[in-house]
Each structure stands twice: as structure tokens, then as C-alpha cells.
Amino acid sequence: MADRIGIRKAGNAGLVTTTGGNDLLHTQALVTVQAVTFPARSFIIRKIMWYNNTGANVTLAIGTLDGTPAFVQLLPTIYSLNTFDNALTEAELPGVEFIAAAPTEVVGLRFNGNAYVLASAAGVLIAIEVEELGA
Amino acid sequence: MEISGIYDNGPIAPVAKVHENLGILTEGAYRYYNIYYIEGLPRSRPLIIDMVALNNAANIAAYTQLTAQLVPAIRPGGSDRMKEFLHLRWEPIDDVEGNLYELNNQGRYSAQGVFASVTRFSRDLDPYLAATTFFVLGINKDATISAYNPNAVALPRARFIFQGYRYLVTPLDAKPAVATELPATAAVY
Image (cartoon, rainbow over all chains, first blue to last red; front, side, top):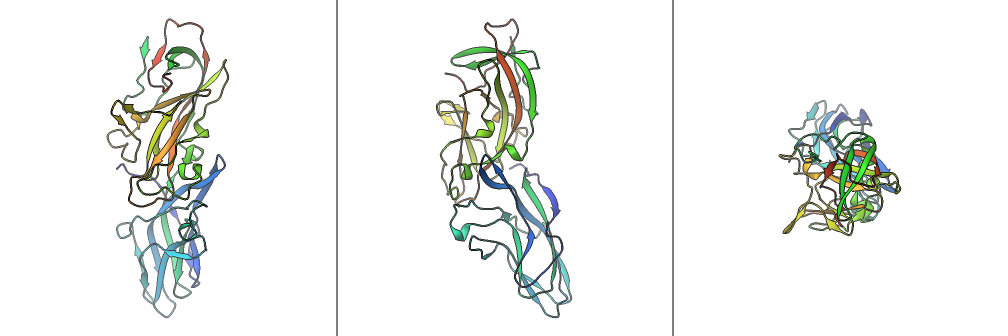
């Protein structure tokens, strides 16, 4: 298959400090053409970098929200050691494509297509790089 | 008579220049037009269409074909005196296959025993998508698109993107001495 050429950019939420809830990392670009709405650009996370100086180890789950809205984890849990920084790059990350579902999809699969981090504790710094695909 | 190089394996280019003549196979014979105007339709957001959304569907299920739908973005306009004529290439940007129909559900990219589709693999050996070239002549000779999901799982979207040229053509009453003949249009009826 020919390469899909995308645009590399930082997650548009920038540098995020976890709160222990769903923290937005990147918002999907939607478009309405001919009265129908769909993603102009889906995206794949190509890098994740984090730093934990919270005083305890923290787990980081990365995923999206369904129609409830409830968090849906899409990548394996990252274990973030106290006082350590770390990063995952394209070679380590599976090419999970974040893509918004149709409004007629069942609630549990009606993903909004945005990327969120759900941390087990507040105070971890995290930033991502994404490759946006589409036009 | 000149034959255009519409399927040459290279970047898309206009099939003729402004003020040249085109012979377009439509309604059973070559009809002749003079090109009044040409402009590009760059590969861009307004030329993406999602067939899941156009079908008002929840998703595209595994091994399932969505009903072919008219795509207004590539629906040319015009009048009897000045027609829009679209010259397009396309591909899916999700992992689905596209089938093209023109006129009365006449499948394009077909031979006696096959109805081919445009897929994410169509760029292999054909990086400029030359073989996906098709034309739509205004008016009322519209194209419809259907999508097929070749995967074992449902997909949330079935998006396709188009690019090409828009011509404005004026009909000629008689066959001109020199014209570029286009055998590629679907309008063979």
C-alpha cells in the first residue's frame, strides 16, 4: 500500500498536566460538506512524552470518548515512574487511528475521535505528536 | 483528430487547451464542444466526501457495500449553451473500496467479466491514479459512488477524495476539423 502522507504536529492541547480525569490531548478536525459532517482529518499518535514528579508512580491511559461520554482506552496503559521522564516514539506505538464516528452510531461506539489521557493521579506532564491524515 | 493521453501514467493535466475542441462520447456518439474555460480543483477538504455520512449510516459493516449515492460535490452544472465538464481522479482515504457508476447505474472501470474498484492499493504502480480518471458532463449525467468494506470489522467512515479540473464547454453544431476525442466518458448511451 502506498504511504499515507500526513502532517506532523503537536497535539493541539499542547503541554497537558494530568488532573486524574479525562484530559484532552488533541482535537479532531471535523468538516461539514453537503450538509453531512465527518472528520476532515483523522490522526495517529506518533510520539508521547511525559514527566512524573508527583511523588508516586502514575498510570496513563490514552484513548477517546464514546457517546456517553465515557473514556475508551485505545492504547495499552503506560506506567509512569516517579521522578522519571520517558517517551514512546513511532517505532514503539501501534498505528491506532483516531476517527470520529457517525452520529447515528450506537452510543458505545460513537467515538468523538479526540485523544485524551486518563491518569491515575494529577500532576503528570504529557505532550503528544500526531500525524493528521486527510485534507 | 487527436487522441488525448488521459490514462498516461503521470500527473493529471488538462486534456486540451482553452479554445481547442473536444469530442466527448455521449448519447451514443462523439459530440463536439469548444473549451471556453479551465480551472483546477485541487485535492482539498471540500472535495472529501464520507459515504457513511451520505448514506446516513452508523458505520460501514464488515464485507458490506453501501448503497451508491449521488455526490453533489462532483455534480456538474450548466445549461444547453454552456456546460460544466469535470475531469477527476480519486482515491479512498479510509481502508474501503470505491465503485463508480454513471448514468443509469452503469458501472465504470468494467469489462465483460469484471467490475473493478478504486482502493488504497490503487496507487501501487499507478502513483498518480491515472487509471482512476473519469469525467462527468453536465447536466443530468451525474456520477454515483458506492463504498465496500473489505475488512472483517466495521469501519466508522468511508471517505474519498477527488481532484482534477473543471472545464466550461460550449456545444458545436458540427464536427470541427480538429478536436481531441475523449473515449473515456461514461456517457455512452
